[in-house]
Image (cartoon, rainbow, N blue to C red; front, side, top):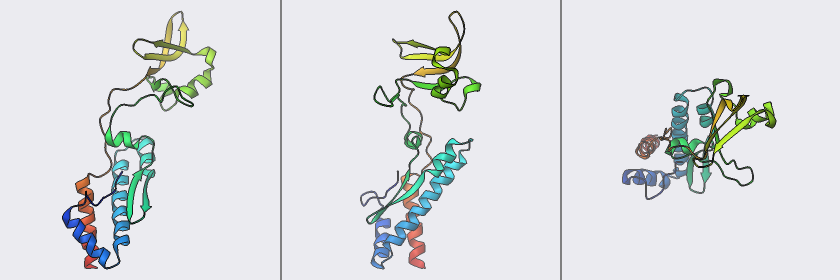
Length: 187
């Protein structure tokens, strides 16, 4: 999610990095800078709280070493969704793909999945109701007649989600790089 490329670095940062490169400390600079960015992303993710999700996102933030470059990435499957926002869509009908998203709407299934719910009660003991026109539906337990104790809402996609970023902005990352370069030049 973070990589400073030649065309995105500030002129000052290019000069400072060039001085360090000339002293044979370019790789050490990139490593130290990446550590700072990683630490900031981890701290921001952890600061969001919650029981597990943001801790998992924070644990997924890693430094990736490339030839002459460093990148900091979050490998959690939902990290990019949180960072940039956008729709969440069902994966589709392909192998392992789901046609609907199952969103828990009952406190007794919070933190569970529709798959675990169906396996726990058995396919014959649960009810799916899908409106083909709207692409939405429900999953729950039969109460008798047409009544259902709804446990999950089913939808093909969500409304666009707002970003909830945890990585520093590009200008903050550049400032971290400049500050670290100055510290290393003064050492």
